[in-house]
Amino acid sequence: MKKQIMIIYIIACTMTLTAQQPGVSINEDGSMPNPSALLDIKSNKKGLLMPRMTKQERDSINNPAAGLMIYQTDDVLGFYYHSGTAWTPVHTGSTAPPPTVAIGDMVHGGIVFWVDPTDNTKGKVCAMTDQSIGAEWGCYSINVAGADALDNGLQNTLDILNEGCGLDNQTNSVAANICAAYRGGGYSDWFLPSKDELNQMYLNKATINATAIANGGSGFANSSYWSSTEYDFSNAWRQYFYNGSQGYYDKRQYSFYVRAVRAF
Image (cartoon, helix red, strand yellow):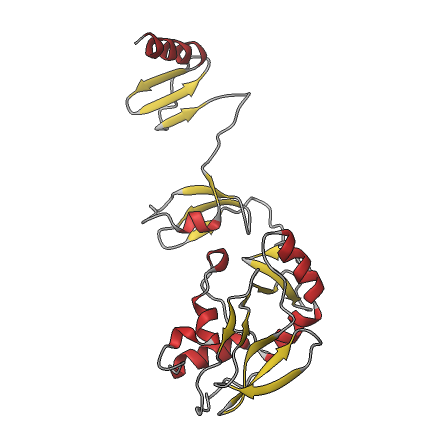
């Protein structure tokens, strides 16, 4: 009881909370709240600290109310409010451009392996770790319409998913499905890289490995990785990350590593 009285006394000595319908005032001078405010905070020594959380923690909030606000501590840092349908960044009065990125930066859920040559605020990232150390490509003896793009892994992956084929009817066990199911950084738009995207990852392997290892991830294995680019009805392209060689291999007979990517 004495402890409770002491706590109340300390609060009373350091801060005045004036509860007056319809507002509450938090200050050190005993002033009344502004009539237009439900909560009126006044101080020339301290600020208001919003709840701080990661993007993944933010996205796990159940049924966020429209207007709910938090401060995001990773990915694209800053204040966010929920519009009623989506989390939206709070923009300042300035129109500052988005930050530029470089190969090896850790942003948007992964590590940058390609930067758009026409806009260095956009690019593609790969996951921090492998999603599989031995997966089949799937869709054996099926010519997947559209999955032959050399530089568009997202479209290839969508075409593979739309085909609905897999390994012994277990579609979640093939390379494209493994990538599509990945949720690194809280994102849901990961895909199996195309032949050319995979090569960009190989060309920047040393830089990507250094960033991954320094941040709790893992480097690429000196082994083969599947691309999402199909060669024909029974073969797909892969790349050997020991020396960079590319070749097409049987979609069912071989199991290779898988590393998911996404664009931003």
